[in-house]
Image (tube, rainbow, N blue to C red; front, side, top):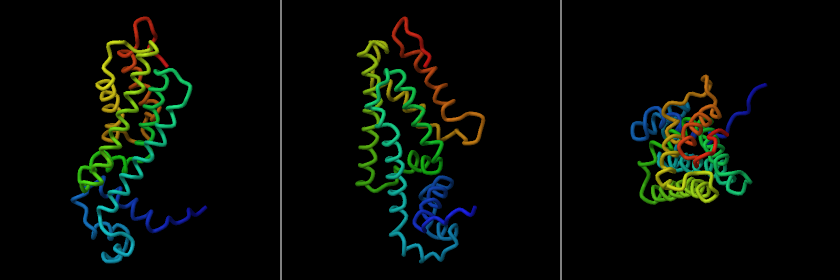
Length: 200
């Protein structure tokens, strides 16, 4: 069955995500985008105001994907260690399903204008807070060690899941669940309170 053609706006965003990911934001010109889409250079301006509009939209879409994947976990009835494991899986799943936009999101957002940059740093703080809440809850319920620093522990978790975009390859031998479970097994072994198993 022939796949329906995406709207032109979606095609432009897909092209921008791929080219920004492969070449970098500054190294990609409007002419490059137009050529990739088979359009005349000036025709792009009928759809967008410029490159930064595309960068902002890519970043905004990616942040919403992470929010929808992670924040719905807040109200689930899971112990902290299981919730952390599931959060890591969902986080890596968003990266794996959107490699181009994830690369742009984590690597090219620094090129945003000050107002858009501030929104991204605000989002980053909300994700930091989410993982800190998980760690803090685990300490309070006796699942995690009482001497853990929730802030530093959250940074460690985020370093593992965020940087998956630099090496993970969809279609390879490891699924996002495999990666998340491997990371969680290693991390939870150091987080668990004495006497508790570190498995799922």
